[in-house]
Image 1 (tube, rainbow, N blue to C red):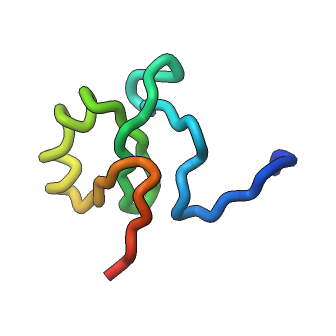
Image 2: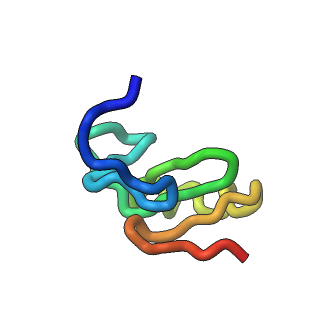
Length: 69
C-alpha cells in the first residue's frame, strides 16, 4: 500500500533516514546501494565499510546524488 504524501525518486533518500542496523533512535549518515538499499550510522559504516565494498556495495553520504557510471 502506497502512502499519501510527498513522492521521492528512488535515488533520493527519505528525509530523516535512520540506521538500518541500530534502529530508529540513530540517524543514518551513509547510504549503501547494490541490489537494495542500506542506511548506516557513522559507527556501523566504519565497522562494515570494507565488507560492504568487497561485496560490491556503493556507499555515499546520505543526501549526496550518485551518478551511475
